[in-house]
Length: 245
Image (cartoon, rainbow, N blue to C red):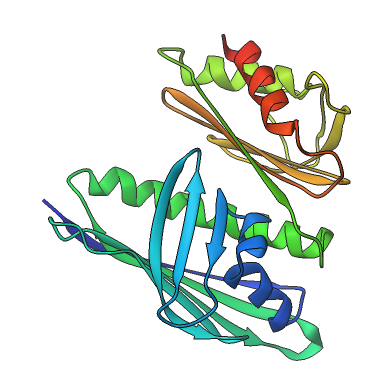
């Protein structure tokens, strides 16, 4: 049975509406803080696409008002499911911007678990957007996506492996210093900016590194702003495979 839903989140960002627009309504901007590799055709009626690990999802741009409103909607499936996103931008005095995000649509049979995951995810995604705009303004991130199955390993065991791989104490606290050495890449040294039961995020001088662990799988969504990123995906895949083997 399908189920309609709506999630609304709001945040204040320390940048101008134009900077927020570039981050939420362009392919390179979305690449720098959200998920996957993104393309946006800059017009109402255009196509927006996200590719995550070879899984490409397309939607139609339903609103394109630069500096004010951007919205997309996927096609409706045979059973009535679809997903829509709307971003509303409002400038404030002092050069800051209020961003309101509305995600809505119709979910499938497992709608409650999917809804809970979406609801938990948005505060984290908006936090990452803030990290990007505050620390890497005007720069474009290269997205790195890595995935590895964790099988039947208990969640606590997977979490412990990640914290060891990042040289972090347990429990992981915001502000802790992380260190990792993926083979073939410079050492990663940074600060934990987010930690919850499913995610650890680390910001360095040239990147935002995110480690997601869910039942049966570990995902990485990194956004790299430094040079020499061509081998990063393979190096992080090797690092993760060795960590949770």
